[in-house]
Length: 356
Image 1 (tube, rainbow, N blue to C red):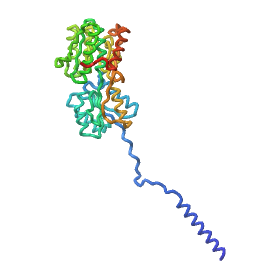
Image 2 (cartoon, rainbow, N blue to C red; image 1 turned 120 degrees about the horizontal axis):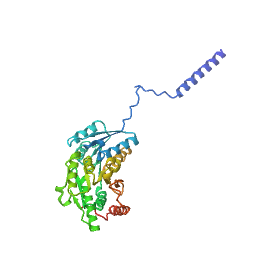
Image 3 (spheres, rainbow, N blue to C red; image 1 turned 135 degrees about the horizontal axis):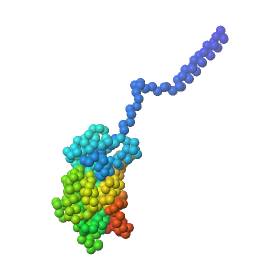
Image 4 (cartoon, one colour; image 1 turned 30 degrees about the horizontal axis):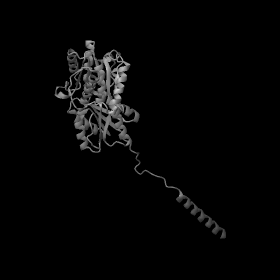
């Protein structure tokens, strides 16, 4: 009897220990829905480019290259839509939003009205506009470039290198963004004349007669650019600054056809990007919109995007003068380059005026 009581006590103690051990073990986590986590949405950039597309060897291509670099560096998705006419900007901007773009980049001042209107209607959507201010909208990062600074140097260089005493310029369409080029060009020639006692003439632009500015009316008609260039050359012009995107190819073609004359490349370093015209490239006024598109994407990704405007200058590398390296540029002396370097310092400091 006594032994049974002892066995019973031992059994009860064993059951109690087993129960305590079981209750001390953590409960297993279970997923009652048996679901997996949703994949992270990829960051998307959609770029609306002007006519000419991303292979225009000019403005559009430069902006797209910045976006491509960001896509590679940050592992994001990038796409673009080509605008064939002004009425397409609104539809293309809307299409970018519809495809889920985290950032919409639009290219050119003509894209600005559609982008700004879209920004008002979609306050949570982020935008970046190349060649136009953001007009103070918190969801828009604008971009302007002081091309008047670089073109001042190009104007001085052209005046110094002209053998006929006549240089020319024309625009695709006159607007603040293109006027900055021709204003600076005009002021550089004017300063050369004043400092050297010269009388180099500028054909195609006079800030006092803007309504008479030589312009094509678009940025893709290369034949029109070629014909206008030929007419300039018939007037004795031997150096030309075409501010007209892919229309500028028409200028280069005219120079090759005549076998003479030089040009100032615009937006990209034409000596590098257009080697078939290398002999006719005196220099290029480079507009680093690739830096802007890259910076806009980076700001959204790192959470610092807050709208405002990004201004490219000679000082911050947003624009620069790049000399050619062949026939038209071989006679640019080290002394002239040094002189222009000194002028650049005065432009940056504000000592020299680059806008009429």
